[in-house]
Picture (cartoon, rainbow, N blue to C red):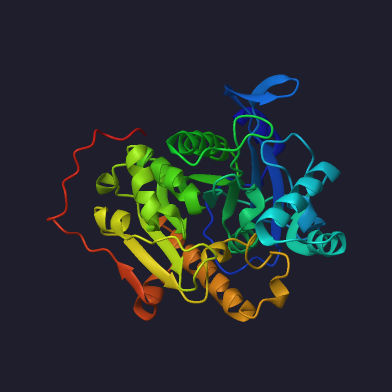
Length: 376
């Protein structure tokens, strides 16, 4: 698999490069198909290898690619349908109707016809780049994070996002340890594929996720400390009461986790009032664990799917605060990754000096780690 990918993605050099200012060449986008033959996926015609498609945003090496629209990101999780196809868009509109309220045909067409900053058909910028692998929430598409991914790619990162989906056509992942276990293996498969790309610096890889997806993402970081150098929670389950129970169900020993940890949460109430919890955060070994509060954001606003690229966003009375909060999420994520992926930058230090971010202090009175050695 890696040999095929290498043949498809040729870059001018393999020298490491450090992210700096946003690239004038822009952002590239492509999809890598990463079927997992070790697991079967049920379709009407039988079974096939689990069809994982990895969406990749990356710093572009030139600005002459094909411009993309939001529809070019739309693909049904687990489906073999082409991105932007009629079936994919029909599924997308139905999902938006269920989750964000009714959207008519004209409004939906206007939404998916918006130009995005990314381009297709353009080679990555020369060198190997630090990478963030993002898992979606429960039963969510890979383009959940499109605006964040574009912004990070413009700053020099590769962002690889995968969907969350069940074991067959029309099947949803369960909200339990079984569903989380499926997500964890999807992340591990993605890490394997992404680390083989010639424009990825395999020594500088982080994982992250929103909502329920943060638990399997943290489990991946805990299980593979030699591979995963940092973890980012976009208002993930690691900061909620329900996440404590699920973490226990999957055997996640948070007191043993040494991976640098950033959890971001908002100040605006979500549609459904779910109790937050600092238990997982406070049980970490520390230091290098941070709890950041982003003013103006609710739970869904940590994604572009439910936030800045949601139907009717321009009519929201809190639009400006959500846009400001989304920019802060980009700054925090970028600075944290620069710091803990070992790249030259003083931005994270500056953020800690001026922003209300709590750093967990190492405390010898915390429960000692008694877990067996993690997998690597």
